[in-house]
Length: 127
Image (cartoon, rainbow, N blue to C red; front, side):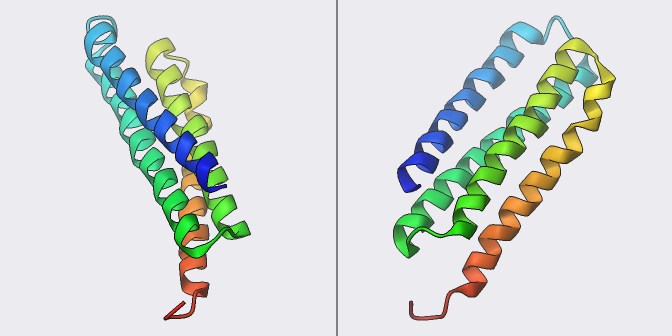
């Protein structure tokens, strides 16, 4: 689990940089300012949650693996795909129905962070 989430976190962070550069250099002249802002939001959330995956990996190495940490990582990955992915496609294609998928990704993000918090609260001090 630790190596898996570290690898996914690093890969998704790298992709966030690449996707952001693509948007800044190639998409900027092709899509409007509003669409570019939506695209940039996807990039920012992808990077934040990729770093969250790396954090979960480090915590798993410190505390040991658990179902809560496993679900936290899975949910952050799902959130990146649903939230950021829908924003990328929405901003490039203008297909507005994809905006209905974005909140599902947000719920995954919230649930992932909640699982991490529950794991932290379940730990006794000194452990």
